Image 1 (cartoon, rainbow, N blue to C red):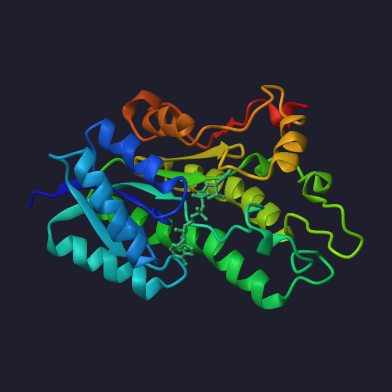
Image 2 (spheres, helix red, strand yellow; image 1 turned 120 degrees about the horizontal axis):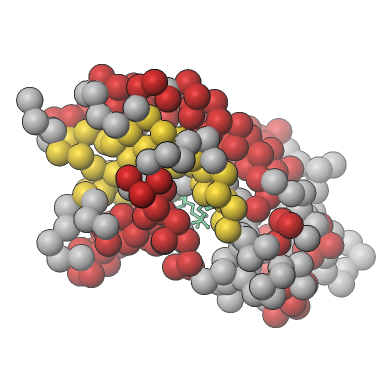
Length: 269
Ligand SMILES: NC(=O)c1ccc[n+]([C@@H]2O[C@H](COP(=O)([O-])OP(=O)(O)OC[C@H]3O[C@@H](n4cnc5c(N)ncnc54)[C@H](O)[C@@H]3O)[C@@H](O)[C@H]2O)c1
């Protein structure tokens, strides 16, 4: 039975998801964009269809924390004679320091609720384990050479410098939460684990660790972050597309278990 190969992106409806999708479409891949947010997902599908007219794009709601939801996507695509040969583990719950709502004390270690911890670890770490297991096993079953890309961060290799999140308030002292560090360090471990576990099954696994993206953050915040980056600026949203193309294609055929850090040099200072 002949199968069509598709690349699957989790958490595709967020800031970077569209860029990953465009990168894959630009190198001629068929894609499945997935997310829990069905409205944003459908809007993204329309945008991508307008830009890449002859492309094959499926939009599927999938919750990476639910094995049932992941297996249901697998079932749906199998019916269409599709096999996922590229999996991009991208979904996250991130407390972005963009809106004023995030400037609170709830992310501080001493206040962090166990519910938030569990929910975020579930999306950021358990999700990639479940998706890799379900789709990795299917790649093996269908005997296709597969690629799994995990999305890390510069916080996969360094600790957050909490000074950049401080605001002039004696009462509110926001921080980047502990979950993000644990998830992003953990994802590098998962990458190495899968890279060795399935190396003999023709599955490669690598991690892309981007630095922060310019999304119109507060000027004071930007100044503080820029001072920590040798290139003195945040990344443009599209600056990781080249890396995605490289990691998801045969151009990186001898790369396995690597953490590709693209952070303007922030983590080497
Ligand atoms: N934005 C940055 O500056 C930056 C920097 C470094 C690394 N990263 C990493 O890049 C990746 C994408 O980041 P982003 O900025 O696009 O994030 P985002 O918050 O904009 O998007 C995340 C997406 O994940 C989805 N999601 C949340 N829970 C889910 C679940 N249970 N199942 C499926 N989808 C779920 C959300 O609906 C959202 O669309 C993340 O892994 C993030 O850690 C981002």
